[in-house]
Image (cartoon, rainbow, N blue to C red; front, top):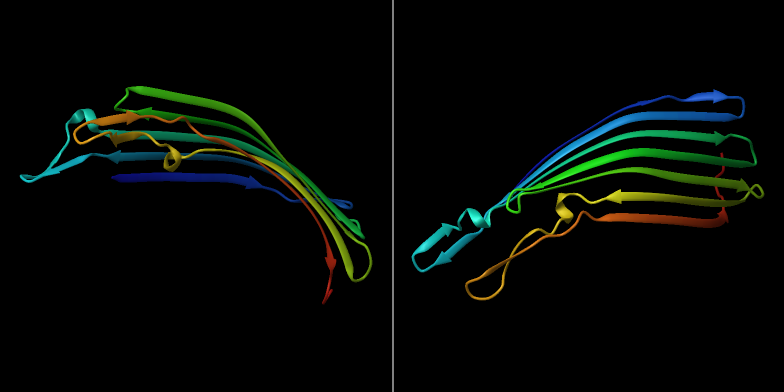
Length: 180
């Protein structure tokens, strides 16, 4: 089995202070390419040989993302709040040589995030955080290939591209020590 991966991410990030607010826009492009090359080797008393062309498991996966991340933070004391939203246009193409199948998907994904903290007193602080993130699988999470069904037969199987939605909500309070 051989896995070759290439990934690059280029972005432009600015920070602008506007009164009691900080504006942080970011624009970027990310691209990646994976190639998984695997072959089945059969062993018997006469030695090892590579199985025929019908058992090759070559996968090619290309990904591209264009994202805009807009953030706004309030710098007023005793409370600090921040909001950011990342808008992503993502696309992937999966090419499976054995099945002669090409799968593509394109998605527009918003990923909002909110953070707030409040200094209750000189020693106590309360905070709240919530975010939403959607991720798409990579070539390591694709379960395509062959299973040895019994003594002499292989069974081919295929899986879809996984999509994961993660939601986090955190509320906390605590005592602050060593405040500067």
